[in-house]
Length: 352
Image (cartoon, rainbow, N blue to C red; front, side, top):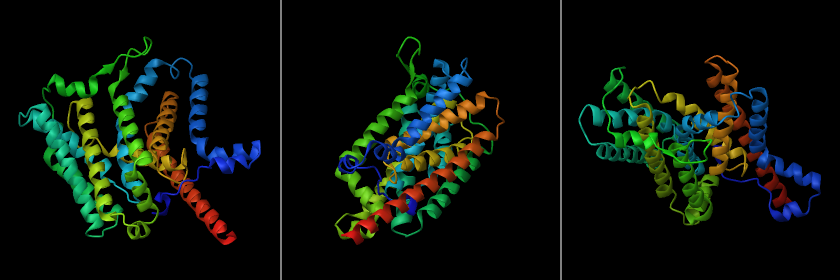
């Protein structure tokens, strides 16, 4: 998992002070290249599609539709910080949104109880993943692929391939249907976007401002060295899987509130873009290191690119094609950034 190791490439102030204007600009391109590319795409699509793209309706649509993907990307980001990967973010959302609907429609549970049990299920699934990876020593890709497939099978078994529908309480529908008053022209901001913003701020504080974040990055860079320095690697790795499972189950609740039906065919379409967003996050803001704001930029460039392409009348297969190609490019860039960092460190050590 070299592409996930946590070694940032962002230049320091002392490094920039020694460079000329052109060299300083070139040094900053890898850091802010992706946000600039996103801005460039917005400008291009706004010029080419002036009647549909640069509108409040399209902006609200992007914020509302991509909130689920953004939250899943942040969920997937947590194990990546520790050098692991969690594929159940795509499979789990299938089971959890079905569970949230079923408990209310089929069994008559109140919506707070249904949400609480769904979140508890996410915690337990994350704990199982953590134990498989750290105690049973199964590779995280294999372990989460196995548990995710089991979760997907359970959702299919329960639904039988049919939709779970019924009357849902207004309180449950309000989890996603609430609009927060904003600028007059926007007629409110979708609350899903605010969930993403609040989650991003919390995760940024944890990963960038607290010792916990430094420990996780240290584990991702070199788990053995982290252990020798007194960091309880096993406990932290299990913890990030538990957190990922919890966030995935909450995203499932959000999706259930949005769709208001449960169906096992929904969910896997979110897996690839969620992983793409997380991997792209390691190529910007702090290149070579998975990070919160880079992840959101990665999701945004996917949202902008796909929205513009769809408005040009592209076929249905273009979106998965775009996501798959972007994933390959993202992993390639992340791997290249990691090799550059390692080469630079070896050169510095040999010079010393």
